[in-house]
Structure formats: structure tokens, C-alpha cells
Length: 113
Length: 116
Image (cartoon, rainbow over all chains, first blue to last red; front, side, top):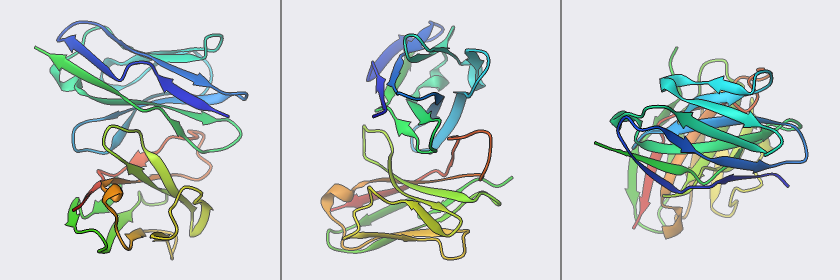
């Protein structure tokens, strides 16, 4: 069965510091990978996605993620965070043989001044 | 392009009462999803429609939850009777059928339910 593990439930960081949010997955088939962001009291918004091709994908707001097939990881990174990046971040996996998204439990990113 | 519309944004009811949430997806999107998001957790799929047919409702508590998408456009999710543990945000999402962006969903802002 497929699963998604977000290794950190909370990540505090100072403004302008780099950040990495970690996501590992388990699947016996090829997958599509996603990061969604949820700002307070809002719905989820797609941050970036990996479908195929280059393993380094760039998303909105300066975020990027790298797909590592051998380590079954899809970690999210940003070189310099802003206060406005404070939000909940969800990693999600879609097995290639169906369209059902499997969600991680989320990582709460708190950017402090 | 208009996004996914949901209403109401907030609802407070007492246990054993009923409540209904409405969702209007992005125009032309064939697939519509209802998710339940309990505080501190990831979204849990309740039901997935493709046009007006149900694709997946395996996690819908059918003794109290119901959903319909009669004309294949907007949808209503109902809870009757509500329990305390139903307190959550109910998220509606849509996606186009046959899109190469498999799994990419477009979410509404959610409907926050508090059951007292």
C-alpha cells in the first residue's frame, strides 16, 4: 500500500533563513508527487508538482523540490523564507495507476522575525 | 477564471442537528471531491464524483453523510445528524477530466463546521 510520511510536524525558522521540509513516500508503482500549501483559514493551493522529466522542479513563491527515486523522497526547499511563508505544507502522492491522492499529515512552517 | 466556490464559510450547530454545504467547481471540471480536514491533520477524501457519478465514497460515513451532484456541476454535502467529531473544515476541490496534471486539484476556501 502507498503511504506518505512528512518527517517534521513543525518547523520553526527565522526570516531569510533557508528551509527544507521533508517528505518520503512508499509505493510499488510509479508516482506523481505534489506539494500543496495552506495559508491560515484558506483552502489548499498547489505549490509545485513532479510528473516526469527533470527531478528538480520549481514552484511558486521561490520554492523548489527534488524527486529522489532511490530514496523515495520529495523534499521541499526554499533558500530564504519570508514571514508570509508561514503556513501548513502538505506533501501528496498520486500513484500512476489511479487518481487518488495520498496525503501526508502536514508540516507547519512558522517563520519568525 | 473563477475558482471553486463554497458556502457557507462557517457554520456552528449543536449535535444531532443537520447541516448542508454547497460547492460549485471550476467551470468545465468533470471531477469533484469533498474532503474532511480535522484540525492538525491532512485532508481525508470523503467522496469523489466524475460528472454526476460516484467514483469513490469508501470513506464516507453513509449512516450520517450524504452527497449529490445531480447535474454534474455543483454539489451538496449533507450531515444528518451531526456528531461532535464532525467538527472540521470541509474542503471541496475539482479537477479537469483527462488532464495530464493527474492528481492536481483546485480547492475552494473550505467550510468550517463546529458542532457543540
